[in-house]
Length: 302
Image (cartoon, one colour):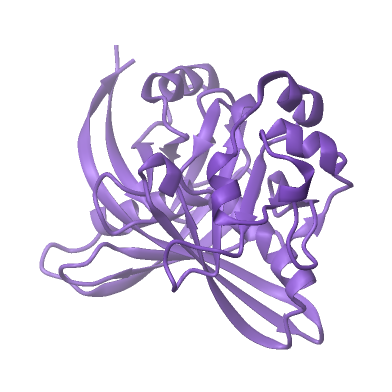
């Protein structure tokens, strides 16, 4: 029997017991994929990360990311949380204010993460999206999508925003919802969900109305096929969402920042920082950032 150290962090929040919880298992080279999947089911969080030795010595670590049901090529809150944890663990004891560059080898490829650590504050990590957003085919029709989330067709869409399918490593169906009241009612609606969404990663719902005046969008994400009934914060969806903001909000050249709030209906408020650079009318850079707070540590026997 082998014993592995792990940490649990809350990501995209500065407060413990908010944000999206993440388990990170360290020095996990001796584990195979089957064992990793079993451990991820045991933690039963949106994702569990396993930290391995990097293939490239210039990189910080190789990581594998699992939901309770499957391995993922890339995910946002695991990237933010793991980079924050590794930067903190490697920080010299006497150094309280610092910045670090962490390069994580994920299945999608290397992901560069800048981590800012300040005395008395939760670390803030921001990564460059490993792929720019792209449209990946049409979504189901509005009637089927509305039924899948327990809403009526009139509650889908606002302004010029309409349902789309985008990916920046992971594919999502993006559903604009008319109001904060409507998005609060949304839920996975059994057979209607299966009919509309079978085989797809998940549905990212968003509306322009928000709880906090500083937020640009309010969001929810459902992915039951990945073992995630609802996700408190979805960084990979936020990366793909940049393509939607650029497309429908017609961003001008320059750098644009948006705050996305998520997880409020679950009692796990999360704030995702989205930064987009547009040059010559094209989206050229997408960055996702957020804080991460360590809440627990222990050992797991395998």
